[in-house]
Length: 174
Image (cartoon, rainbow, N blue to C red):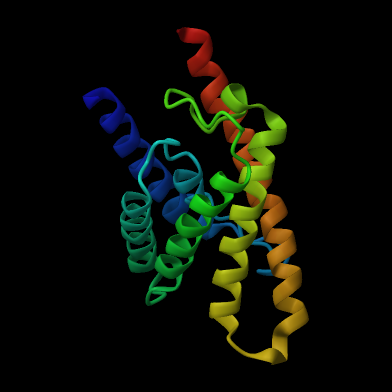
């Protein structure tokens, strides 16, 4: 139990630092493509995590990112929306017999199809929320939607890659 908590805390710190130090300084396509890696923490929350706990953690994560980015709650609201829809999506794609409490939301544990049907909507919801709050006007509607699509593809690529780099190595050690 304590080991799991320390692992989640270290993942939290690692993803925040990776986002703030590395990802925020990478600009692709003249700012058209942005890679947000911090939503991976919400995606990787254990399946047994209660809804209110996920919302509080998401708010804290978003507020920390907002503090470094000086974005006044934009990431906090997107992370909370993502955590809320995570509960909806988990119910929607739930197996008939329910989830095994020991399973983790990883490709190795749940399979690639399940993971992508879980991660894609969450990342897209997060990106729609962030980019529409950022612009909050219809003048850049099509540019915003292109940013959502391209940034979602890049972020999903990083999430998918992290599954094979981080979690497959850990499974081999056990």
